[in-house]
Image (tube, helix red, strand yellow):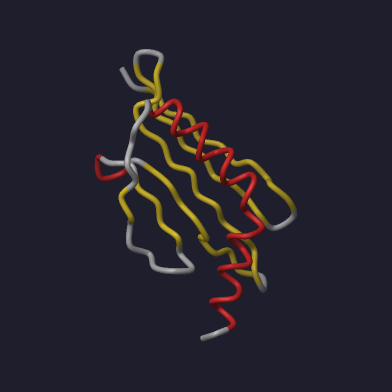
Length: 105
């Protein structure tokens, strides 16, 4: 039986990481990591990595909303920890990419 956990992690003022994990038999069976940022009083999805649609993929919203498949060499437990760390380390850079793209419109 799968169980799901959902929670949000404030990274800094106006930057939140939304997390959803599906766990079954003591292992991660699926996950969503969604970075959203408050820009000019509106929330925007900036970066997302998840296992929806049956495969691991990312969406870099400053480039395109289209999912880009990621090669999964390891367990989803490891992939979850890897991308969680990557987002925590890079969220300010991702936000800048997004705002730079917005300013060019």
